[in-house]
Image 1 (cartoon, one colour):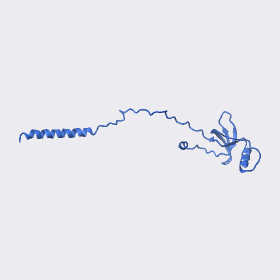
Image 2 (cartoon, rainbow, N blue to C red):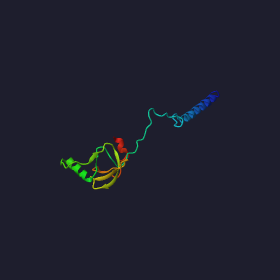
Image 3 (cartoon, rainbow, N blue to C red):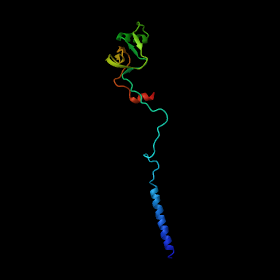
Length: 138
């Protein structure tokens, strides 16, 4: 029986050592974020869009010289010919400054470009602009 005692102790020591290394092996992390260097994606970098001017007249809005011209334009649109209206249609988004309001359909504005042209428009211009994510839906 003495011959089996050292073998039994040796087997016990090996099994304890094997179970100890298995527990240490479970703590190994192969995807450590500090060790892996991320390469930038291919292509051009993202460029943030410039903020939109507000308030503004969008393409298709009418800008009339006088309030009476705006009334004549409204009459012409209803089919009542009331003479020519001194108005122009805006073709590009144009920043404006609100000067006066006469109800929701009559607003006196000044263009903020170099000419500083004033006129009347039938566009309803809210005080606050649209939310920033509204342009992303287009």
